[in-house]
Length: 629
Image (cartoon, rainbow, N blue to C red; front, side, top):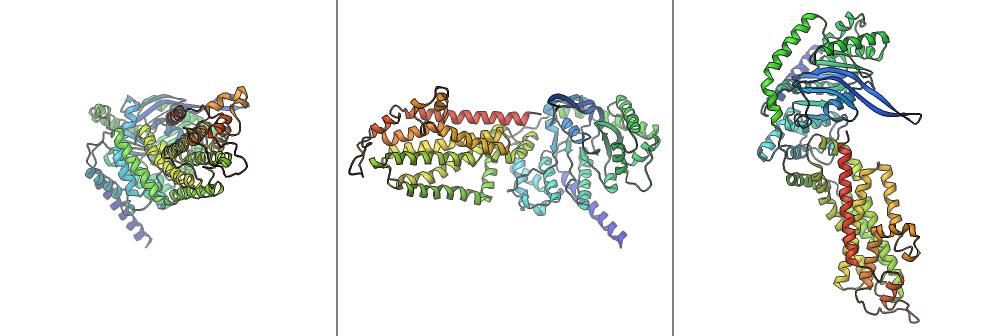
């Protein structure tokens, strides 16, 4: 019964592989690209006893990854597996040196981005989109506009069928299992049918069955249309180890073996490192890399692999000369066949959709996610309405009473500060929470940063404007402010623009600082700016802080709102106090508070300039972080 079940599983796997192959045959064939490298080093700066010291992670290694093969980069933790993948994919550039070749030509940055993609260890996907929606949006963003919507939809369905995700097409991604998320991560990048696929620890977090199915899928993707598939592994089982075509083993940043999995034991046996009987070859390889068989053995392996790599970029670590000659012959034949394809892959750059098309699809994606997260949306609106009613009841009827002018000033200050905080805190965590998703999508060429940022603003600005109006309209009416349309317009515009300016500050804080720091620095910064104009008059400000008075956008808004309410030739105010009303004439109030000479138009221009400059600075910071490699 065991044999029968095993045969049944094998037949099912073969059927899945054949289905995958048939589904992907409809995709346009991409050129075969062989990846090789030599003298590859990578150094980082560390601090020891407050002294800056350079630490070398990769030590002049070399090797070759052939098209049509699934290669596993193996080694113990900290040996440089992920670092090697980052350097080869172009994800980490600063601190690296050496030569990387594509079909024996030096790697070009644009060409590398055009023919490869990088799938990181964690599954960074949009949790509030369904599988089919994620794939469709990826197709619209990554494929040129010359491809019809019908063709894109057909390609999406073929990929879902090929990767076993068609039955989960309408499932929200946050409800997928770990293995299904891994498949979706690959499917999203296969939209452009890349020639090279890098995967960092793709089997982490999966059970043995899911690992086996996933590795079988990767092997088929490599063999189908001759892709170059390179992934990092920590310690696979023996059955999983045999599924790979090639193994590249690292130890302390140096290569100790490259070749077929079946040749691991004979290769080390020739060097007097014998694997125990019935021992997992993968475990044995890791034990050698750790140094359990002696540091002298590792030094000898380092020297051997170094000599092999210097003999040519396509060298393999083989057991006997006959095998080596066969592989070298095969390599020469493949190189001759791909000479014509080299010029093809160098000239055919994938044309991305124009920025306005990217903005449209990114905006549609953001709107879809907001619709799925109605609780957050309703909570923001309800909070503004509830605070408006509370504030209005506290300052009931103060807007048109000369005896309550100072109370009305407090109402304006509280309203201004409340909308500043809601604008700030609503977005201050948005960028840190999705930074890794943005980094993956931007690195793999989904869209430009400009398109992404505009699509975010097209959602956040109208939403925050709606929240401001939900607060402003009832608060203005209940507190008994002047019913002149011009005064209400100034009141609403200044409060809304101030809230949007604070929102831009929230984006900037989230983009420049870690999450825990940004949620602290942002509010403290706002409190500091809110002091000027309300808690202290201009003549009383120390000279060293005068620049903060002029810099404060909250001060500009606060003074302008009060001027629009009590200036602009407003008449004498009614007085509820029968004894005496000091501010019966609004001009007296503005003069004593140093607000009589406020120019609301120049202050409005300053607010808009502050808003635009903050957005430009935010975009610059995000661009720097995304491109700092």
